[in-house]
Image 1 (cartoon, rainbow, N blue to C red):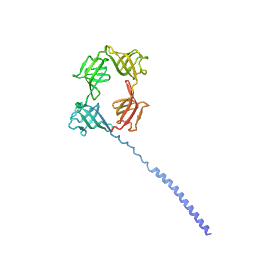
Image 2: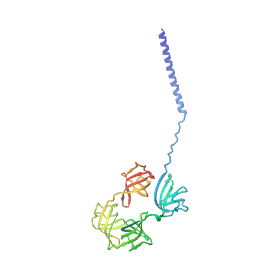
Image 3: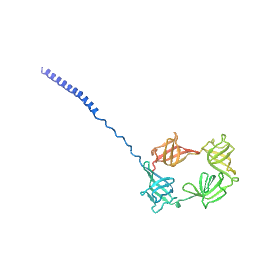
Image 4: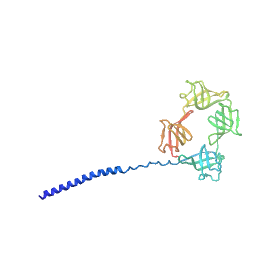
Length: 330
C-alpha cells in the first residue's frame, strides 16, 4: 500500500512538471512574438571604402617650364608636377633653369596632381652629349630641323650643311646625341641621288596589290618595286630593307626589297590609363588583346604602377601588347 501511494505521488509530480512545462511553452510563444514585432530591426550602416593609397612616382627628363619663384607648376619631360615649399631641391646651391636635367620623386594623392617630394637637378650644360654619325633618308625638312631615318636632327648657326636638304634624299649626319634623343648636327652632307646608292629600313605603310609591283610607301619614302620582294609575304606594319637609287623626284628605284617581321620591342613606364582595349604606359598608347598576358604577381594592374610591356609594332596602328609585367614604382 505504501509503495502504491508512493507511485501515485510520483506520477502526480511528473504530471505537474509536464503541465508547467507546457504552460511555459504556450506562454513563451506569445512573448517572443510580441518581442519580435515590437523591437525594430537594426539598420546596418553602409560600409565606406577607404580612400586609395597615394601613388609614388619617379621619372627623369629635361625641365621645360618653370614658374616665377619656383613654387608652382613645373613641366618636366612634358609632365606637369607641383612644387611646394616642402619640395626638396638639390643641390641647394643650384638655381634651376629651363633645360636642366631633373630626377623627380613625386606623389599623386587620389585624383589630385603630382606633388614633388624631391627634385635632383643637373645643369643642362653639364649633361654629357655623345658624338654620333649615321646615314639615312630625309623624311622631313624644316628651317632648323630635319628627320633623317626617323631621327630628329636639329641645326644651328654652327651646323655645316653641304647640299640642299630634300625629302627622299640621302643624308650623312655627324653631331651630338641629346638627352631627348635628338641630334644636334655639326655636319650634314646631302648626297646627290643620281650618284648615290641608297640603303635604308622602315615600316611598310602603303602597298600596291599583289604581287606588290609598283610604288610602296616605306616610312614616308616612296619606293618603286619592280621585282618580287625577298623574305615573308609583304603586308602593312612589317618592315622593309630597301636598296636602290633616288631620282630627282625623291622616288627610290629599288634594286632589292627584303621584308622583315620585326621582333617585339619593350615599353616601360608608369601606367597612366587603363581601358578595356587600350592602356597608356609611359605616355605610349598600347592595344590590349584577349591573348595579352598581364602579370600581376608583383603588383596590381592599376594606374600608378610601373609596367614593362612587350609589344609588337604594327606600322601606323597602335602597338599590340603581348605581355605586361607590373611592379610597384618604388
